[in-house]
Length: 254
Image 1 (cartoon, helix red, strand yellow):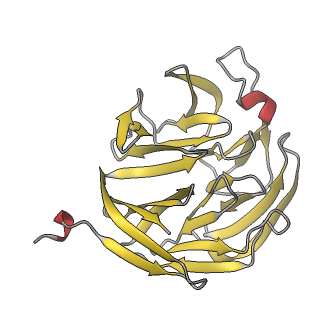
Image 2 (cartoon, rainbow, N blue to C red):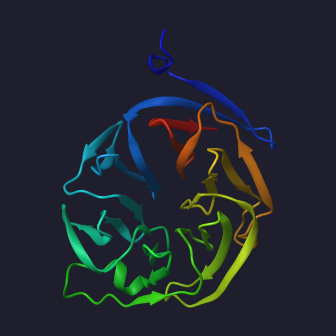
């Protein structure tokens, strides 16, 4: 029996005694997935965007290379780096150019340009954005990051060298700069509850331990063993979504 025809069940033991139960699900060839505030969105290798309804991915209009959902709504970027917000069933283009965007802030958004420049759009401009007549005061931030994600406590990012950084970013985009955190990750995602997950360039998955409102940087990294090499992860409401380098999507619970 071919391995691709088998539903995988993987029990991943963590150092605090809990187990992740991971199974292969039917979504194939996803490029990227994002979960937040009880919603899930994704894009596939053909740049088709989707929204999860029940157990089905429902196709959205347009073509996107990256999509995100969070308190600021649903946003995405295409292969030409154009930025869009999903408004009343349609994509409305926003000013600016980004290769990656994240709507996990409360409710600001952040992103990285094609040259790894980090940007922030303050909360007052995100939720109310309806189209070209809405103001978009993007704020450029210091440093260079290739992937950038925010949650209720702080923001996390990784550089082209896979170094990890955190930033205390306010809803008005005021901040205290970057602080490096030990470890190496190629991508990183912050959940709606502040949990942090990431994948390395070798396909390993890690979660950050000890995160609280008073210690948002956490205490250390714990690897989550996976049956497959993983290129992208996201987490929300107790469910960890993982996309393998071979195009298999895993759903893990603990």
